[in-house]
Length: 141
Ligand code: HEM
Image 1 (cartoon, protein in one colour):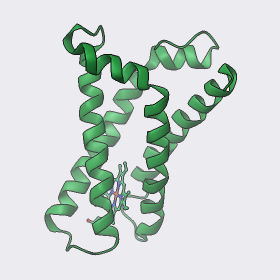
Image 2: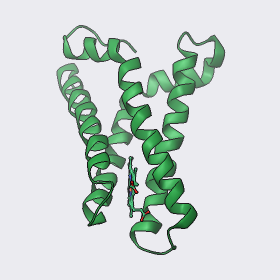
Image 3: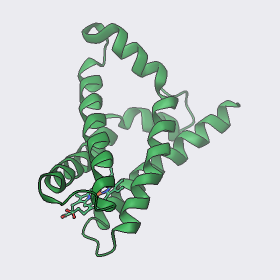
């Protein structure tokens, strides 16, 4: 795949994730949770592509751990990923009404809010990379 094509995909996916998290926030109180849930489902492949396009960085951080120059960011990203995963996974039983709200609803709400805040922080902490991506200089890995 050409570099230009890869760059366009990265930009589209990153913008899509920002819009997606924003849309999850806006639709979080229903009243119809289908829209909210479908946006969450669309987020899954976008997160997968986002991870795949940064996979070299992820592998390098996992291998080098505290010797990695961006180890604090790697730990932050791990917490962000766990929160987002719990939020998305816990959404399904609530949507299909397999389980009465209660604790699961609290888990989904708390991890959802945390994930949205961490998504904004993740963007801010990666602002240098975003700049390179948008300015056509070679993106930092
Ligand atoms: C990153 C993705 C997501 C975020 C950030 C998110 C965020 C939230 C938040 C903050 C609430 C609480 C609303 C409130 O009471 O103030 C909520 C509720 C809800 N979400 Fe999500 N959500 C996400 C993904 C999903 C997915 C994938 C599904 C379904 C497959 C889903 C289904 C629901 C349902 C059914 C409720 C109502 C819960 C209840 O009855 O207590 N969400 N979401």
